[in-house]
Length: 200
Image (cartoon, rainbow, N blue to C red; front, top):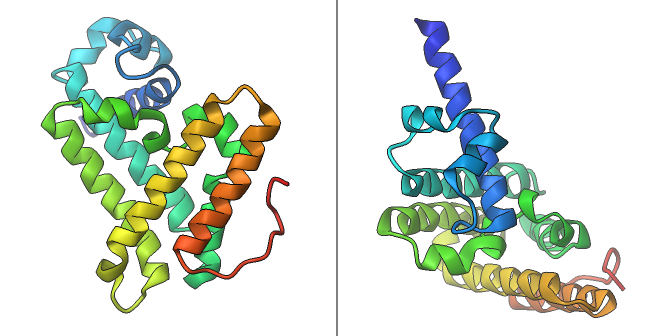
């Protein structure tokens, strides 16, 4: 029985992760259940064993994507302002821009999440606040909540710059936009930095 529970949980997680990648690549509305289940290597009939609706999967996948971003990027960055710069440079990198399905759900899905039902928007709110607070802890270690709004503003600036960079057909201009985005974000966060590692 224990094995079955572990197997079911592993299968559920496989669906969540596959859906998160597909949503970011093709959009929420552009990703049907049949495609999502095929990505996970499962049949359509298995979907309702794990989720009551696509909306439930969307909310769960958005939360999972933000949790992964927090664990894999924010939590592993160095402490203090050096870590802030690491996060900003990762976020506004050409590698992140060019790998949508492995990147930030905000830059890929924000316009669709805005139109989603309350559970998905709440899952997104909880997840993005966890990411923002991890960043704010480096900006104001003694009182991270005092830096939450500034951190969210910087996060929004980065997401917008990444979205626009992805949309531009001119690669050089797209790279310049990322580089300027790094400078603007670091300035907003009051971080002195050099230009090493920029896209120029």
